Every structure is written in structure tokens, then in C-alpha cells.
Image (cartoon, rainbow, N blue to C red; front, side):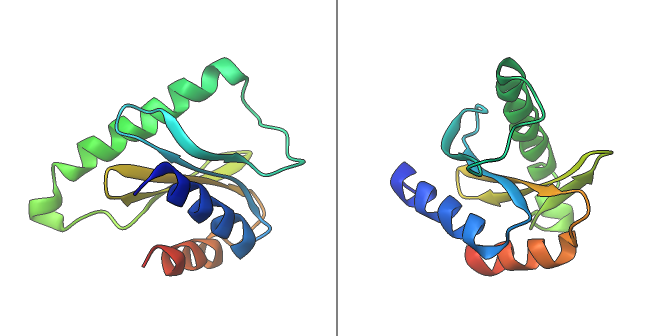
Length: 118
């Protein structure tokens, strides 16, 4: 998917639910190619830590795909932390990464994102 289309997808993800803090597309090397923080929201991590975070999720996704033969492909993965919830969605050669407000119903947010991706 071209970066311009990924940017439009990130905008649609933001429009889907106000509890989404971040919507971005990262490539296999962990580079952010589209999207970012919702306007008016301050990131929790310092700028220099973001690249490391994106790379971590790209690596996790690559490692998960090694089990596609046994378990089927990953639809999404989610982690709940003390301050935030993070979900990733494989999309071709990219990974859609979103962060969700801690108090949000993540099942509802994830269902909205999956509807946009399908």
C-alpha cells in the first residue's frame, strides 16, 4: 500500500474512535511511514524512544509470522500496560500500530479498526 494510502487509512482509524491516541504504519524495519499522534495528544515516550518502540513491534510481528503455518496468520496483537493499550495489525508489508486510552473498551476499538482493514 503506498504511503499516501496508508496516511489516509490512519486518518480513517482516528475518525473511527476518539479513544485512539496514535495511529501509524510502520515498515518491516520499524520506520514510521505514515500517521502519528492524534492532534492535541502528547506522547508518553520521548522522541528518541519511538524508533526503538516501532522496531520492537516490527520484530515481534516478524517472529509471530513464523508460526503462520501452524496457527494461521495473525489478525492483531494487543498489549495492555499500566498507562496505555497498544494493538498491532499486520497489513501487507506494513504493520498498523495504534495506542488506545487505558480506560477505553479495547474490544470495541479493535473491532472498528478491523472493519476498516477488511
